[in-house]
Structures are given as C-alpha cells and as structure tokens.
Image (cartoon, rainbow, N blue to C red; front, side, top):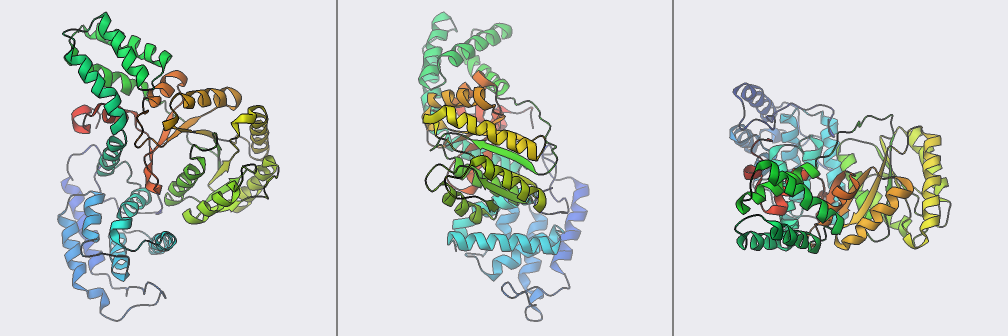
Length: 465
C-alpha cells in the first residue's frame, strides 16, 4: 500500500488489456457516492465548511460522468480532474478531494496528501498546472501504489528512451552500419562489434564477454543472418539485466547506507529516495554523516525540509560514526520506517574513507542488528569507465548491495550500465533521468534494453506483459 491506508481498487491489473465488466459496478458506485456526498466540503485555508450548496457544483456530476466513461488509467483520470484548471487554487483542491472520495481514501489522509503537495508548491514557487502536473502524477502513482500501472510504465519508458538518445546514437547507429555492411554474421562481424561496444563505454572486458555470449546465442539459434542480430542482442541484454529476487522484509527502521564519491549526485539522490518513501506513506529520517565536505550538512538539511523528511546532524567535523549512533537512537525512539545515512566521498583519502565506512557499519549493526540493510552506491553515468573503478573500489572495501546510476539523461556513455551489470552483477535499482524529484525511477532492465535499441515496449516485449 502507498500513502493511503485504504483505497478502492478501480484500476485493472497490468496483465489485462481492458477493464473487466465486474469492475464497472463498484467503480460507478464509488463515483456516484463522490458526486452526491452529503458532507460539506472544507475551506482550503481554514478547514471550515464552505458556503451551503457548494457541494452541488455542476462540475461534480460532469467529472463523475467523465471518469466513469474513461479508461482506467491514472493519466487519463488526472486529465479529467485537471480539465479547466490552470493553476493551484481552490478548484484544484476540490477536484482532487473528489478523486480521493471516489477512491474511498480516508479523508484525513487525503487532506494530508493535499497539504503536503501545497507545501511543496510553495517551496518551489510553482503556481501553474504546466509547472507541476508531472510531479502531481508521480506523487499520485506512488501514493495510490500505481507506479507499476501500465500507463505509468509507458510514461517512464518514453522518458528513458529520450534520456538514452545520445547513447543510442553511439551504439545503434554503428550497429545499423555494421549490419548493412555484412551479408552474414562472421568473424569480421564479431570483431567490429567488439570495437563498437568498447567505443560506447561498455569497456574492454565486458565487451569481450558480451560478444562471446552473443556468439553462443547465435550458435544455439542456428543463425548467421544479420537481420536476426537485433533480437539476439535485445534478448541477451534483458538476460544480463534480470535482477535476482531479494527479501525486502526487515525489522523497522530499514537502514540505508548511501555511499559514493563527491560530485556524483549523492545528496540529491538521497532526497529523491526520501521523497519516494514519503509518498509511499513512510516516516523518513535523513542522517548527515558526511561531516567532512564543506556545506554538505546544510545542503542535505535543505533537501530534507523540501521533501518533508526529518533530519539529524551534528556540527561539521564531528565523528561520522557518532552521527550514525545518535540517528539510530532517534529512529528507534521515533518509530521511523526508514533511515538514509549519508557518508563522505573523499576518494583521494580512500584508506581513511573506507575505515570510516567500516566504523559506521559497525555502529549501525550494534544499535540495530541487521543494519545497514542496504548499501547503495551512487555513480555518475557521464564518467564512463571511472564509474567502473569506483564500483570496484567500494564493493571490495565495504560491499555494495545496489547501484543508483545518475545523470543518465543526455549522456553518450550509457553503455556503462551494461558494463556494471556484467562485471559486478550488482543490481541497478534506480536511474536518474533529470533533476526533478520524479526523475529518479526504478530501473527495469528489459525496458532499458528496448530503449537502448530504439524498440517500442509493445514490439519488444509481447510475451512479458
């Protein structure tokens, strides 16, 4: 469940191509109830009821009819809710309340969602729908536990495809030329393919491994036809990115240790992960254990306030392990669901850095057995092969459970994703596709392979939906 403790299920499962007949009756009933609710709506600033008869505004019946007749997709429903709304005003809040009432969300939780969003709008100084619509849809997808809904997945795939445009030009443009110049897949073909992969920042060893795996796949398929190569590559990439299942259950609070060198976007990644957790209904604490870098604590505190997470820190220069120690006391006493612990990234003193990380891990384990439950390494896609060396260093020194790859949008070095997955086998869980909160998204290896090759989801994954 997301932000809300209860909602009426009005969306069909992802596997279905269309809403089923049995779902129509409860959907209609919920919308009818929302349109004819007896309770007087609340004033958006004082919490007091509005003038009598306000609940009978014609838009309620019109919106109920539009929602009832539309596809059960979040973007479509939000489009109806925002019809005629140009800016954040009372009309927007009333229409959102109507949607939440139709979904039978608890009123207090609906009001909390709206209040939280209004605070964010004020902090960002956003006023017009065009400025915040995408963020609102992202928040709703998380809050309603609909991020895996097909429409939302397609929206993410489009953004991923756009973000990989330069990398796709680097790889697929050359592969197209390779296929056009060969009548059959032969030894010369494989040599040229290795060069293409190395130039795309896949790296020498991963390029050799990938070429070898593709040779074996082509042999098993019994083909040397260049026309079949794209499908072979897509299938191989999807296998490479297939992440193993992991047990997510932990004794709260879940403790996440954030590691990575300076400049990779670790601070904003923490903020984005905290934002996701908040929208999923979790109580979040951020601990500033990077006490070395100038202004690190202040920057993280600003982000914590912006995303509505609680914050714990000591003065600059303090012992990072002491910050972690105190943060765990706060988290355990305060009933937090998740704690993000920031750490220093001064790679030029890597021996001291790794000793410091080990000390923090020991403290966390002592205070909360099993912690840290996840160690997440943040790497920058634009650094290419440097990201590989950073992954190797941190993994050998303190262990890495997951990788977040930032700045994937606009880089021509997206081949590093393939290299990391092949060389270390560490799951890539999120990718950064922009600067907004909504631009940190779960990594789907199958979709990444399709976007990298310029293949649509419907065309490339007909049997997986």
